[in-house]
Amino acid sequence: KKIVVFASGEGSNFQVILDNMHSINGKIVALIVDRECKAVKRAELNNIPVVRIIKKQCNDRNEFDRQILKAMAYSEADYFVLAGFMSILSKEVVKKFPNRIINIHPSLLPAFPGVNSVQKALEYGVKYTGCTVHFVDDGVDTGPIIAQRIVPIIEGYTVRHLTEQVHVVEHDIFPIVVKLLCLDRIKVEGRRVKLLQGEE
Ligand code: GRF
Image 1: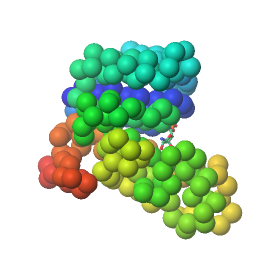
Image 2: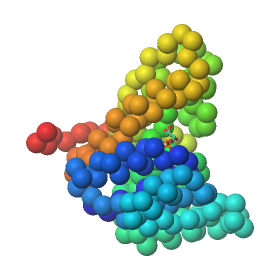
Image 3: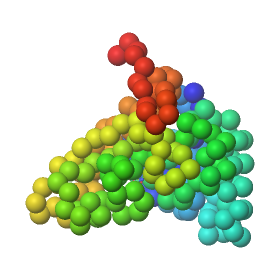
Image 4: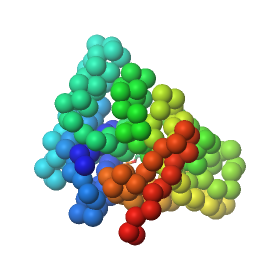
């Protein structure tokens, strides 16, 4: 399977996918970024072409969306993996690739969608948070949930501690989901996501 990864930041989730590509039935054909970021370096070190669609340099939202769509179509990818991509894909883009775009989000959705989810969970006082991998639909962090992992919130945690703990579970879950996706073992039925049986 051909995969395109999208990132805007550190790229640690991108890195775990790179590190696990040997056991994934797929190839990363491009990294798309919307700003200069550390993920670019990771792609370069792994000889993965980088497509820069710098949001700030686009005249308007339409131009950005058009360029994203063009890059996605050109890639001929089967799946698109948002690994810390900070722009929201337009409804038109999402509609073109139903159940082919996944995202990782640092909370137990539907709690704390949007930005600053780790901080929001801490401030709210929930005792557990975690991460979610989901298909992208035309809402913000609302698509069918593929997998989640829990992180207990221990008293005294700062946003930094909790972010680190959430990253640990993200790094655990994300390559597994990408692997299953590339094996076509993840099926969507309405809002529900089913995992088809395989050999392991
Ligand atoms: C992750 O916490 C992910 O859930 C969120 O953005 C963060 C990206 O981290 N969407 P990194 O760039 O992969 O280190």
